[in-house]
Image (tube, rainbow, N blue to C red; front, side):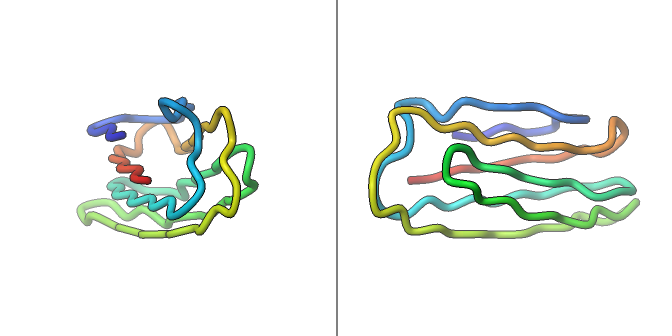
Length: 89
């Protein structure tokens, strides 16, 4: 799943839910403020400091031992911060 050139906060459903195995999340942002990514229902959450005039990036990988019928990724960001997200399983 990919999302690009988004401003502000958004919650995205992971199509087909979460599978057992690797879950990888890459986030890029630009603009002033802190962006927070949360993955439900697994409880993963991490921040990313965004900077004006620069692209900040973070990559996280989680190994899921069991599947979940649904999954969402929520990005909480200031309204003036642009971001892009890639989620792979």
